Image 1 (cartoon, helix red, strand yellow):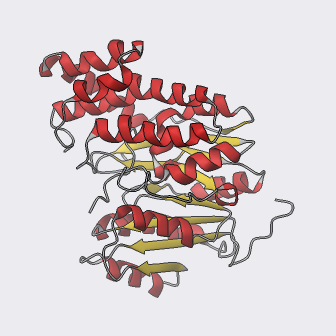
Image 2: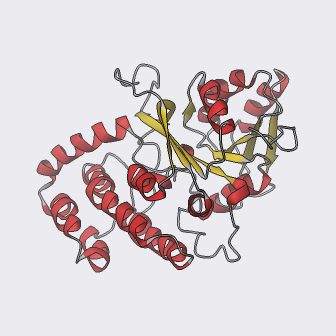
Length: 339
C-alpha cells in the first residue's frame, strides 16, 4: 500500500495468540500458520502470549523456534487473567493490523495469500473473516458449498448489519491498530468476557471503510468454551460496552442492529445449547435476566422467549437449527480462556 512500508518493527499484520494450558490446540494452530509465513517476516508478525501455563506450551513453542519460524514468545511470570493477557497481545502487537486469534481456531492453508493483498489494498477499520465451525476435524467438517471473494463497505451501518454480534468473535475481526483510541479506563471492559470490544469498536468507529471476507479463511473450534453466563455476557455486559461507544458518537442504529441479531440468532442458539447440555454455561434465569433489557423489543418475544419457555424436547429442534448456523459461522466468541 502506498505510504506504508513493511519492516520487522512495523509489519502490516500481527497475528497474536493468547493461550493458557491448551498446548495441543496451540500446536495445531501454529502448525497451520507457520508454513504460511514464508518470506513474509517483514509483513507478518506472529506473537504468542502464554498466561503462565503449566502444561507443555513451552515445548510447543521451542519446537517451532527450532524449526526457524519467527515466533515472538511472551510468558507471564504469573497468571494475570484472560483480560490482561488479551490486552498484552493488543499492546505488544507491532502491526498496523492486528488479529488476536484464539489458540483453538485455525487460520486455513493459504489464508495469508488472500489476506495480505487485501490488507495492502486500502486503509480499513475492520476486516472481518467469515468462518465455519468444527468439533474434531477442521478439514472433513468444512462445508461443501464455500463462499468466495470479499466486499469493501464504505457504509459502516451496512457493515454492522452484516457482521452483527460476531464483532465479539475475536478470531474473526482484524482491526486497524493505528485507529484505536485506547480506553483511559479499562474497568468497564475487564471481567466482562468482552475486553476485545475496546479495540474492535474503536476501529469500527474510526474506520471509513471496512471489509467482509466471504471466503473461508478461518475454521472455528466450537463447543470448546463455556464457564460463563450467556445472558450476563451478551446482554448486560455487551450493552454496557455499547453504551460507552454510543456516548462517544457511534450511531445508535448500529446497536439496535446488533441487538436484533443477538435476539434473533445468538441468544436463542446459546440458550438452546445450554438447555440441551451441549455447552457448559453457568446456570442463570434466562427470562429474568433478559426481560429488564428487552421487554419492549418484539424480537425478544418472538425469537428468544420461546426457546426459554418451551419444553426442553421442543427446544431441541432449535438446537439443531442453531448447530447448523454455528457450523456455517462460529456463533460463539472465544471466551474459553477464563482461568
